[in-house]
Image (tube, rainbow, N blue to C red; front, top):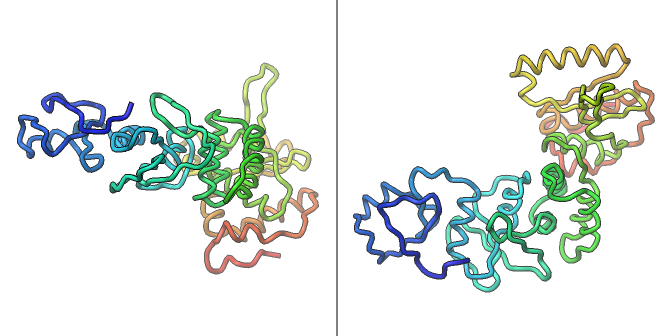
Length: 318
């Protein structure tokens, strides 16, 4: 239920939920005392000062200012569904008619046949609808990252996403279909997605994602980000936790020794390899592929549009 006007409240009882405060509200407290006990989320929308500010809290506050029939969408919907999207300072709300003029709220107009659901008490675009809507705002890599993260949260399957994207029409529908076809299950992080897309957009064979090794009892022994099993080549992204955790460090040593015993090559990629020196990284990957007996096709240039790198990392190593 939405409130079209100020809510009545007892200012002496802090609430964990956002509320509207009209300028003329008689709260029996001075404005100074009120502001000490509360914090403003938006103009006229407050919450108790000790209440942690979360994406959900901001979403609830934004909806208090919205007309009936409004719903959460775009970046805000993506985050509430557990998806990974670039940071954006505003709460995104789609309004059926009016568009709120309020700092901190990004207003959108509804599109035909948008799927809107009620989730945990909030009106919000469905997960697949959110993915399709974000194709208007994100590039290919960030859109695939969103898709991978929503699959990881079990919001949909890659096959279902592809089916719905094929039915999508209008602006950016081609991007939505392309991104949907690149979404995979079993991806643990945005950096793993970026590493896979660097490989794929360069025209190299797509590796298997999330290969798992179990013992005879079914206990998980090892998990590999990207693997070319037939050629005994594994490519993995290592984040800072591998350097900062002694337990993880010892685990990696044991794993590397096992891989060496089995004649498996493990190529380790870190953040700068993707963000700063993608051309050099592709050179390392193709060199490892050739050493493992793989056929390496001529590289495509599409990766350059999505992985800019830095000066001095423009040409691919021979």
